[in-house]
Image (cartoon, rainbow, N blue to C red; front, top):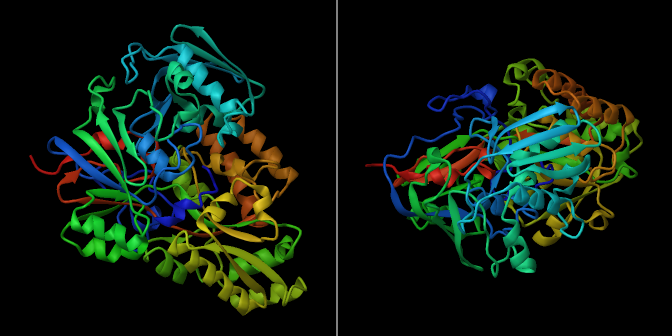
Length: 545
């Protein structure tokens, strides 16, 4: 999930997702979370022919291409086409075999992965169990500084048990560990290349040696990243249709929209919501919406201050005019969020979504009742400090709405502006949160299991920014994380959802679908958040024969 996705707000600020849409169909708006007149489908029309190249717009330059440090949309959007995982998340939000052709679980604490034979890295060498062991263990090494290290917290050992077999032994049952093998924690790279590149690995000066449909060709810092087709790619169903892919970096939302409309860029994910109308009405391409697992949330950073009182958190939630926030921050595309984790995060057991998520009540909007709660809490006139930034227009929109809501109910919501870099630091540096009460986040799952999101609210977890602690919650989480059956696990996760809704360590704001724009010359792209790990560029080709 990576609940803390500050940079995510730059484009989509969103969340949701259709879990059952067919490739050619679309979900109904209420179920999809996209709002009125918004269709959500996991795929765009299929490619009709090959391409020499296409250009893809990113809202920021990747700060790294090191799989162990890639913890945001720009680096993962590039790496999804270069490096691969043991498992794979598909565009329709399923977890399927990846570099591991199969796996077994002889007991709840042992996982055995059988690797695909004959898979070659970009330099022509063959992938072995040694590469898998080195890749996974590197995530656990404190010297690496991987934000994914917590995914390995229950791991006792990772061992080669055959030329193409890796066995993982856990200290206790951990369903999420296995599922996360479909995301960055499960990435496999050449062990020899890690050793050779050293400190340059993942930088513009280093090289990548992975197994994906594209290889890194060049990285011109401040300008572009270019990938070239891997002619020896193992998965023939995903043979790249384009010889090259060029990524350009455009931070300014208006300039990014202009690049798409002018043809300077052929496409892009996570579009600025302020440009939705312009992109939708243009004859230069097509604006599409896909499955998402994210929610725009307000994460409480301090439970010893004003927001330590549950009534104040409830009041602030009740005072939020979510429908108007959606109009201003998400281009009118979205729905008020019912829970901290999105509807789309329930895709692993879609038959349970209606029962366990859709039945949740809509968030209440009642300013008078909210003001009364503040008075009962003796919090009238007290200060709540909300951090904001120019990192994305949506951050300012939501921050101003929260300030206005606070004013209506007697809270003094003070906005503290920080630089984009400082805003990002809030999610990795506890000291940076001192003196702050609230931060706007874009919380999402990497996998289609809602339990992934709710792990970040456990006592002491890396993503638990406010150090919230609830013993009942912790026990319920451990029980859910030891249940192998997805449907039964979803029922146990619903208890976590209820506690989070009742206690509000995170205040849900809204969901919106994933966005992508495809210029007239290209098609075939997956439209949803699965693009972070699915080799999406391989499916893009010419829109006409």
